[in-house]
Image (cartoon, rainbow, N blue to C red; front, top):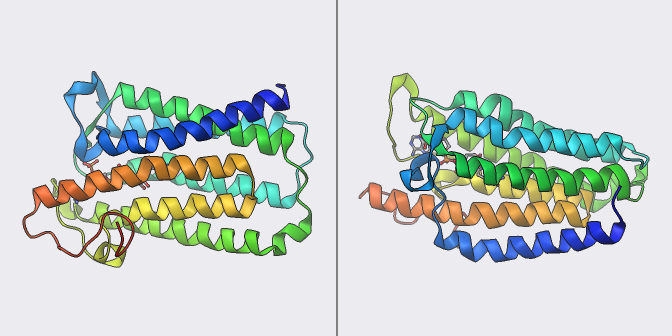
Length: 253
Ligand code: NDP
């Protein structure tokens, strides 16, 4: 148990850090996947890296959720279930769909991601496990819940289907990188990252609380700069890259 004051002070610092990290990440290319680099120290296999860095959030969130003293209603179990659904895909399915020789990932990235996932799991797990006010069943009919749920489902669909389109580019044992076409790739270079942002904005809206908004904010702070890096990379790599395609927000960015 920690005091409410300590929890909220830490959460405000956490939110402030997300705001600080956004411009920092616009300057720094985070070196994994296509941007992998030797300058960030020793590396391990990408696939194992994804599992190691994402698994802690499932454990930490679940621990604080189930050991917390708050009474939990159906809406709260839905928030928990959707969160776990996303991470079941990210840990148990996504890494095994990666095609060809997986890139290497620096240990430093994995350690930073573990720290992030530990804190995100704590802030959300402790909130829903201990501090959260009870959500009545009537919350299931609230427009915030319904619109948030719709955004979550649509975002998850965009995220997974776009990841799958990228995996398909290496069908038939091919390796290397190709220009992706189809779906939202017509408008943006990283619909998978766009989908993930929509997903967590939806989760924040449907659960309507500060810790879930902090996660959505962090997701944007991480993924918008990464999408900008991917977009620039495509332009340098392919002279015939579609000129009207944006990085992550159709027609805008
Ligand atoms: P990428 O889009 O860079 O890569 C996804 C997979 O597709 C990788 O296996 C990659 O291979 C392959 N790939 C990508 N582009 C091409 C191409 N043009 N031709 C052939 N193969 C390609 O994804 P990210 O690493 O940026 O993100 C992966 C997933 O993780 C996304 O769903 C994203 O939303 C999520 N994510 C979430 C974060 C969060 O903060 N919540 C943070 C970062 C990612 P290779 O590995 O060889 O490059």
